[in-house]
Image (cartoon, rainbow, N blue to C red; front, side, top):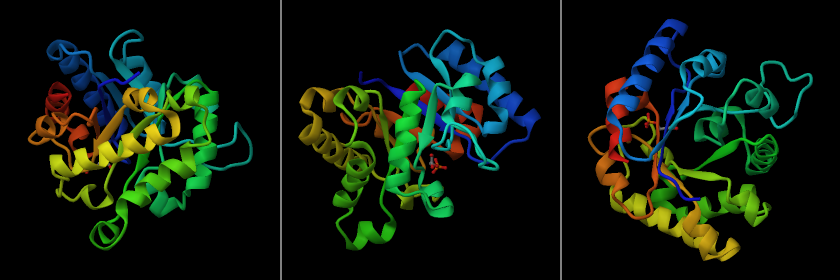
Length: 253
Ligand SMILES: O=C(CO)COP(=O)(O)O
């Protein structure tokens, strides 16, 4: 079902005390100020998931998410956490295939297909990230490239399984750079991705798919981005680390 979602990807930021303060502020502000039916997903570093679970009410619009998982259930994978483990600490969403994980940790479309499977098997919702580099945007078939990321990592799923996936379009050139995609650029790519999904799963599934935008989205530009018909919310990095900014983004959705 197509939903409005704003997810905060804290990346590798905050000490435990800072994380607690941010959780408490964001949860109160969202509860007090947000009246729409937007779902808010908080994705702290995995070391803080258990703590965050205690702060987030079990019922309500605010959900807990992780930033990655391993594709195996358990075993000798030093430093990793599995979807099974994330589920056991109460996470409901998992960001997969963020461009930073693709770039620094060698994640490929093939490994991500395995991660998507294991996340779905454990009843969690994957937030599958895709997006092109600046070089590709300037000189190449960037639309084909991003469509290919979906094809390679997601199109083995049944329509029912695909219906549980959230997509996040995050152009790499816009992440952490202050260079936001214009609302037109975001809309164009989201429209293309929805068409691509329709070509595989049909119109109904495509119309039901939630597609988020990420990349320097902030309190000042979120309303314009989210006003586009195919932009269903955002995956927010830097602005999710400040409670007032993040709440303003949530209110824009
Ligand atoms: O990577 C992002 C979210 O996953 C976007 O990061 P910024 O919002 O800091 O550009």
